[in-house]
Image (cartoon, rainbow, N blue to C red; front, side, top):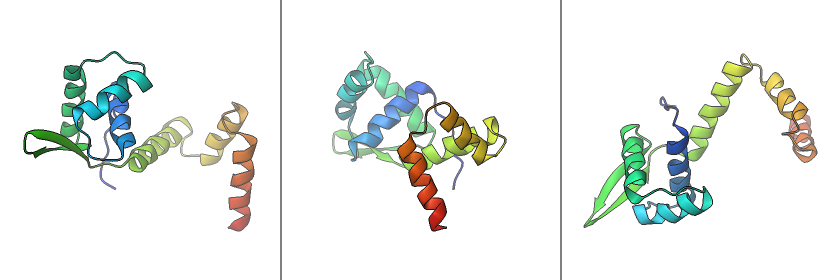
Length: 125
Protein backbone atom coordinates (compact mmCIF):
# COMPACT_ATOMS: atom_id res chain seq x y z
CA UNK A 1 0.00 0.00 0.00
CA UNK A 2 1.35 3.43 -0.87
CA UNK A 3 1.97 6.02 1.83
CA UNK A 4 -1.27 7.70 2.81
CA UNK A 5 -1.10 11.07 4.51
CA UNK A 6 -3.21 11.93 7.54
CA UNK A 7 -5.94 14.42 6.72
CA UNK A 8 -7.10 17.37 8.80
CA UNK A 9 -10.63 17.19 10.21
CA UNK A 10 -11.90 19.52 7.49
CA UNK A 11 -10.17 17.54 4.75
CA UNK A 12 -11.70 14.35 6.17
CA UNK A 13 -15.18 15.87 5.99
CA UNK A 14 -14.72 16.83 2.35
CA UNK A 15 -13.16 13.47 1.48
CA UNK A 16 -15.95 11.57 3.27
CA UNK A 17 -18.50 13.56 1.27
CA UNK A 18 -16.67 12.56 -1.92
CA UNK A 19 -16.61 8.89 -0.90
CA UNK A 20 -20.30 9.03 0.04
CA UNK A 21 -21.34 10.25 -3.42
CA UNK A 22 -20.27 6.96 -4.96
CA UNK A 23 -19.38 8.72 -8.20
CA UNK A 24 -16.95 11.29 -9.56
CA UNK A 25 -18.57 14.38 -8.02
CA UNK A 26 -18.60 17.99 -9.03
CA UNK A 27 -18.45 20.76 -6.44
CA UNK A 28 -22.24 21.16 -6.30
CA UNK A 29 -22.64 17.44 -5.45
CA UNK A 30 -20.61 18.03 -2.30
CA UNK A 31 -21.94 21.34 -0.98
CA UNK A 32 -25.29 20.13 0.42
CA UNK A 33 -23.78 17.01 1.95
CA UNK A 34 -21.03 18.95 3.69
CA UNK A 35 -23.22 21.75 4.97
CA UNK A 36 -26.33 19.75 5.86
CA UNK A 37 -25.02 16.36 6.92
CA UNK A 38 -21.82 17.57 8.58
CA UNK A 39 -23.31 20.80 9.96
CA UNK A 40 -20.95 23.20 8.27
CA UNK A 41 -21.70 26.57 6.70
CA UNK A 42 -18.96 26.52 4.10
CA UNK A 43 -18.97 28.49 0.87
CA UNK A 44 -18.02 26.85 -2.44
CA UNK A 45 -14.61 28.55 -2.34
CA UNK A 46 -13.85 26.93 1.03
CA UNK A 47 -14.75 23.48 -0.25
CA UNK A 48 -12.76 24.13 -3.44
CA UNK A 49 -9.72 24.96 -1.32
CA UNK A 50 -10.00 21.66 0.57
CA UNK A 51 -10.53 19.78 -2.70
CA UNK A 52 -7.32 21.34 -4.05
CA UNK A 53 -5.47 20.19 -0.93
CA UNK A 54 -6.85 16.68 -1.40
CA UNK A 55 -5.62 16.72 -4.99
CA UNK A 56 -2.21 17.82 -3.71
CA UNK A 57 -2.17 14.97 -1.18
CA UNK A 58 -3.03 12.52 -3.99
CA UNK A 59 -6.42 11.53 -2.55
CA UNK A 60 -8.21 12.92 -5.59
CA UNK A 61 -7.48 13.67 -9.21
CA UNK A 62 -9.08 16.71 -10.85
CA UNK A 63 -10.53 15.85 -14.25
CA UNK A 64 -11.91 18.21 -16.84
CA UNK A 65 -14.91 17.04 -18.84
CA UNK A 66 -15.67 19.93 -21.18
CA UNK A 67 -16.51 22.87 -18.95
CA UNK A 68 -17.13 20.68 -15.91
CA UNK A 69 -14.51 19.58 -13.39
CA UNK A 70 -14.99 16.29 -11.58
CA UNK A 71 -12.95 14.58 -8.89
CA UNK A 72 -11.75 11.00 -9.24
CA UNK A 73 -10.98 9.09 -6.02
CA UNK A 74 -7.40 7.81 -5.87
CA UNK A 75 -7.44 6.51 -2.28
CA UNK A 76 -10.42 4.45 -1.17
CA UNK A 77 -12.26 5.00 2.07
CA UNK A 78 -11.31 1.47 3.16
CA UNK A 79 -7.60 2.16 2.60
CA UNK A 80 -7.77 5.40 4.58
CA UNK A 81 -9.66 3.79 7.46
CA UNK A 82 -7.12 0.96 7.54
CA UNK A 83 -4.32 3.54 7.83
CA UNK A 84 -6.15 5.22 10.73
CA UNK A 85 -6.72 1.93 12.56
CA UNK A 86 -3.13 0.83 12.12
CA UNK A 87 -1.82 4.17 13.34
CA UNK A 88 -4.12 4.18 16.36
CA UNK A 89 -3.22 0.63 17.36
CA UNK A 90 0.49 1.17 16.82
CA UNK A 91 0.70 4.56 18.55
CA UNK A 92 -1.83 4.31 21.38
CA UNK A 93 -1.75 0.56 22.01
CA UNK A 94 1.90 -0.14 21.08
CA UNK A 95 0.81 -2.54 18.33
CA UNK A 96 -1.31 -4.64 20.68
CA UNK A 97 -4.64 -5.28 18.95
CA UNK A 98 -6.00 -7.10 22.03
CA UNK A 99 -5.42 -3.96 24.12
CA UNK A 100 -7.25 -1.93 21.47
CA UNK A 101 -10.26 -4.26 21.47
CA UNK A 102 -10.28 -4.44 25.29
CA UNK A 103 -10.20 -0.64 25.45
CA UNK A 104 -13.16 -0.44 23.05
CA UNK A 105 -15.08 -3.01 25.09
CA UNK A 106 -14.31 -1.34 28.43
CA UNK A 107 -15.41 2.05 27.03
CA UNK A 108 -18.70 0.62 25.78
CA UNK A 109 -17.69 1.29 22.17
CA UNK A 110 -17.96 -2.37 21.25
CA UNK A 111 -21.57 -3.57 21.49
CA UNK A 112 -22.36 -7.12 22.62
CA UNK A 113 -23.42 -8.05 19.07
CA UNK A 114 -19.97 -7.08 17.78
CA UNK A 115 -18.33 -9.17 20.50
CA UNK A 116 -20.46 -12.16 19.46
CA UNK A 117 -19.44 -11.61 15.82
CA UNK A 118 -15.78 -11.46 16.82
CA UNK A 119 -16.12 -14.64 18.86
CA UNK A 120 -17.73 -16.40 15.90
CA UNK A 121 -14.92 -15.31 13.60
CA UNK A 122 -12.35 -16.56 16.11
CA UNK A 123 -14.19 -19.89 16.38
CA UNK A 124 -14.11 -20.21 12.58
CA UNK A 125 -10.30 -19.87 12.49
